Image (cartoon, rainbow, N blue to C red; front, side):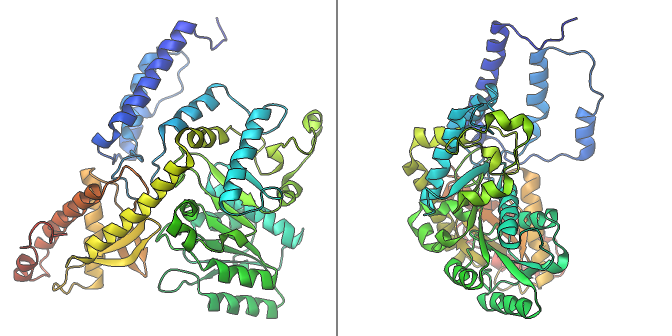
Amino acid sequence: MSAHFDLSKEEMQSYGYKIVDLIVDHWDTFDKKKPVIRATRKEMDDVFLQEAPEKGMDAEKVLEFVMENVIANSVVTTHPKAYSFVPGPSNFISTMADSLATGFNIFSGGWIVSPAAAEIEIVTTNWLLKMFNFPVNEGRGVFTSGGSMANLTALVTARRIKCGDDFSKAIIYLSDQAHSSNIKAIRVLGFRKEQIRVLPTDIEFRISINKLKNAIAKDKLEGLQPFCFIATAGSTNTGTVDPLNDIADICEEEGIWMHVDGAYGGAAILAENGKEILKGIERADSLTVDPHKWFFQPYEIGCLLVKDASWLSNTFSESPEYLRDIEGNESEINFYDYGIQLTRRFRALKFYMSIKTYGLDVFKKAVDYGIKLAENVEKLLRKSRNWEIISPATLAVINFRYNPIGLNLTEQEVDLLNQKISEKIMTSGEALFVTTVLNKQVVLRMCLINPKTTFEDVESTLLLSNSFAEEILEKKTFLNKANIRKEFSKNLRDKL
């Protein structure tokens, strides 16, 4: 009995060509599919739940099964009408680059195993350091699985630099709009609940500088150690950016580590108006950016940038006996010394190949397009009697709700109405369009970073939402039917 996994060259070619054809067909046709797929756990159990087979089956039959049941039951995150969360527009060159990195199974942890992989990670993270005006010679970037791991790596580093081994009195600050991955990271690091200060934001969902100053002063008076503030550069909910220069002033004065979570909004640095909004980001000690978001890379690739490479190496470098022969000299970087992972996949390749192929100018135009699209959608909504802006277009994110003038709905009714609109859109499969909560209000949210999303795509989704809203309202006995008929007797454009 063979214990090998070998296939003939012809079998590998046939199988590989089929997969490439399937991927190409996806890229050629995904905008013609419905973006939303929904299934229950029972439905998935019925399809997949079985014991691991002792005997194998034909590879092409397995592939067919996967296409029919796995791929077909996955949301199309590259779809132009995938508006929710942070969509994953990706790009074809990076997709193929990931296939290369995986196909050749390149280990990207140590220099001696793949000097080219290490060098490309040095080069590409240096590109990012330069974009954000971080020092290229003294600084360092390291690719991670995503923003969650980048934030964790940053906070481990900040704790060691600022607190050493004793962090029993250390206090960390963040806003109520900070990403949940930061709270996870803080818990992983073993901080107690009483060591975390979640501070309220203002009416624009930015951290209140006065409240931050008050919190720091109070903690110092109580003999505690303020050591880190997590600023947000492009919140997931609203796209808003904390006042980075003001925060940097406080952190410098108080000796506090300034970490900026720019996992979502950091890429806006590529757009001219984005640079203006992100002023002060270059003053951070550490910065998270997520190339698999607005740099249009496939999952997974996050990145942490720091101003001093030694902060990372002094935090994460270990020298076990089994690695003693591959340490090399200081210029030959082993990236396992700059983060948590020892075994690392070659994430840098897709970033490198896509920028080399398309050119940075294409990425700049794509980011700028998303920002302007959201601003144009806001203008459309503000002309309507039915839609209410809750958080204006900021870095391609906009929040709004259906609340027609003249119907005098209660807050509870408006919340219910918008939740139902989202549910109906999702059930229809026509768009990935879900709610969030801002100021205790249920609102609809769009994140418009996909360069394939057109104004007409958004307009058609709003028209469909409007139709569902009318259907929902007509069935509600708590509303006056005459008012409903009056409000919905507008022309098509006005019905938005």
